[in-house]
Length: 106
Image 1 (tube, rainbow, N blue to C red):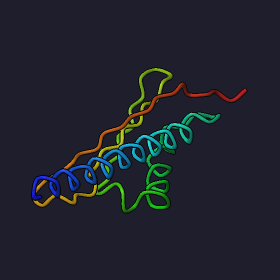
Image 2: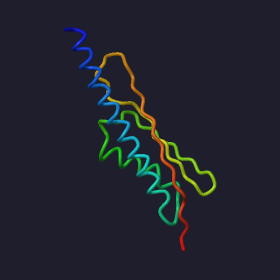
Image 3: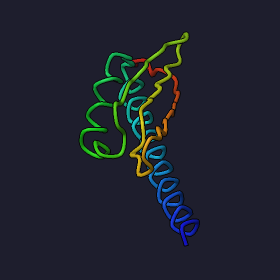
């Protein structure tokens, strides 16, 4: 019986982590969308990610961190954080990224 309960709790943890990972990916994509829209400005990515997390994922991504890098005309947004943990003593990390080309004003 104990092993069945442990298996159920593990399944719940995997679901929370998977959902948190999906939300981190969506937050990174929101940051890229904000940064690449003409005229491209990478400084808009961080606030866009924070706004997305605050509105849609504040309970799913714990301790969110945003990293924005620019390589030529490409911006990359990386979101890291922790997933909700239902298993005592465990930490489940989240890491997601998205990239896109910076658009230029016509």
